[in-house]
Image (cartoon, rainbow, N blue to C red; front, side, top):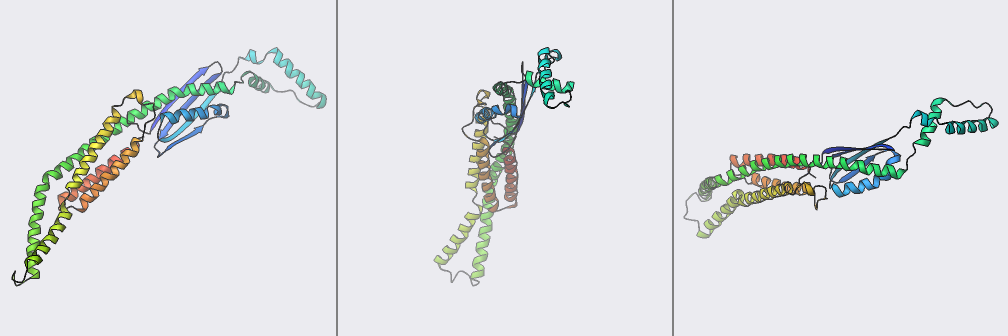
Length: 311
């Protein structure tokens, strides 16, 4: 399905060791750019998370925020007699060398005990991080797909407006061509009269044919927009096929990496459409044609802006 590059997801896992939370935020970018903000205790999971994201996402700036909290043991567990005995023995040993050493405060004793009782194997934190990543990534992908579907529909609606303008221009083309032919006939008469005021007595058939051929060629180059209109219609068909095809693939394939970036293909397609609209404007033989070219460029630019957020 067509996926946006803007979304958010979070996940949390709770165990005997404590809890791990993962937040994923993505915005648009030309390439896949993954950045991490996590404590050192979770760094072991950074590379597995990066590999997992690279399999699921194609483009976008991805920011990963990870945090954790340890389970705090009960006070009676932290203040066990054995632990206090060890601290007392160590304090006596220190005072033999430094007699003026003061006794530790209760908060300090609790802190030492916490460090001893809450140490967790880094591999456990890494596994918890990967477990928290799963729901966060699912939320992210679902959000990207929903936003992508809305963007695709917006572009399809705009494409319908573009097609309506192209069809309108095609409908009026015979009238425009006839008007241009009338202008050409008038211009030819004026040209011949200015060049030969005395009439056609001194004009040979070859000279007259050359002038007519020259004016006809100029006329054909200026107003023949059939090719531009045909290419625009072809691009519109490709756009509709691409968006509808992506939308019909189904969510079961959404977690798999696409074979190519839909956003990049759309960007190229809109560049080609804009080129045809520019040519259409340069060949405009009437005010209506000029307005149509301007409207086409505006609509194409609107679709291009939407496509900038497509993965």
